[in-house]
Image (cartoon, one colour):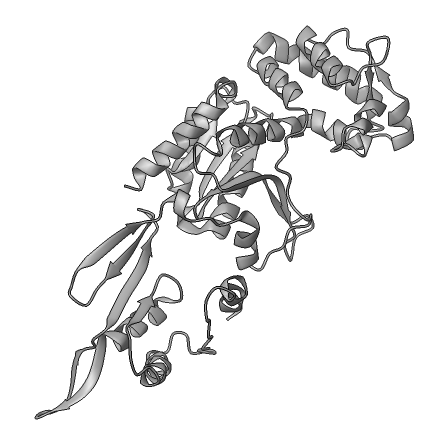
Length: 378
């Protein structure tokens, strides 16, 4: 009943919605037929439609049975005949279409096209009784030019080694007070971090973002001039790997219009009862009513990549049903074998893994993923 109430709240302004509870009898054939029959008696004219996509199997079967047959009296006593004016429909999640069975035994298949239906991510979460921790996930990537240069560095083995050497041996030793926590805001604001060992393109990207001091060192206090980084440690977290999420968001934004992407965003943090931190989608978007969730990590470690994708997969299916699609953007050099292993474990081939070699052309690769998804639904 909670789900029905949420549906009414979301769509009640557009439709005249009446809820009829089965209480604890949602699997009781007699009670289901009784409730549906009582409602039928109150409808004196017009056609009646039944969509049996959701609910329990018993609810679908016995609602269908009650509407399909009406009880009559003939010479032999009680008999049944097909009821007139009844239209049945259901959603086919594999083909992304609504199937309509009409009383003349004709079946109509209506493709649910993404450009004719819009479902916002926030609405999708609300339908599941979940609310976002923040007011509205960002649709604006931060420092996209710097993120683009970092992708170029991560695509080059020699340069990525330079980056990690600088990040761990110089940046983290200056900015962290231990292996996990950043220094205080006051201490971070004082730091001027040398960039001697960094790839030159990153130094230049820092300069263009106005993050350098007069002697060409990284001045963390300058990050506060960027709206997204009101706290310096947010910029530190961005450098720690959040930059990849912003890069992915920028790629989604670039293809949104051409691919009928209706809603998209970054960092969907959702509280969940029984957990400390809840869960989050790094980047997500909808095409029509279909959810696409993307998990991001700069790691190449196989176990960590698998863990990130597993969590994203489970949450996406929970939110978007069988139609949901999930991808991992990571720095693995073997994304195909990683995908094969995970797909076999999940018994689901409808996942995507983008590795190091895919990063530079990520927009094109995401489009291929979408096109392949549309092809499978035909």
